[in-house]
Image 1 (cartoon, rainbow, N blue to C red):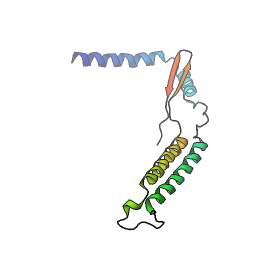
Image 2 (image 1 turned 60 degrees about the vertical axis):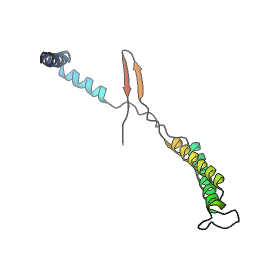
Image 3 (image 1 turned 90 degrees about the vertical axis):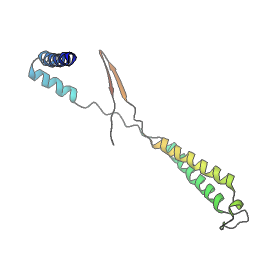
Image 4 (image 1 turned 90 degrees about the horizontal axis):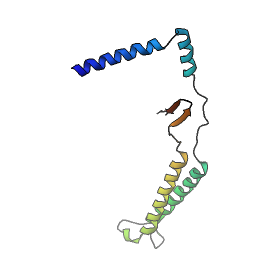
Length: 133
C-alpha cells in the first residue's frame, strides 16, 4: 500500500512539473503546432517489377507443366480412374515446386518495406513506424 501511495505522489509531482516547465501558453501552442506538422513524405518504396514478372512467368509455367504431368498419361491420353501409376509424378512435383517458387517471387516483388524509420538529430533519436490495415 505504501508503494502505491508513493507511485501516485510521484505521478502527481511529474504531472505538475511538466505543466510548470511549459512556459507561455501561446508559445507552447506554436511549438506544438510546429512539431505536429507532418514531415515531408518520402517516396514510397514499391516492389521490384522484375521480380513480379519473373515470378509470374515461373508460376504460370510451373503450374502448366505440373498439371500437364499429373493429368496426361505416358501413352498420350488423359488419365482415367485407376491409372495413377501412368502419370509422371517427378515432373509434376517439379512443376508445382517451380510454381511455388514463382509465387514467392511475386510476393517478395510486390511486398512493400514496412520497417521502422530511425531519425537521429542533435540531442534526439526518433523511431517511428506507420501501421495501417
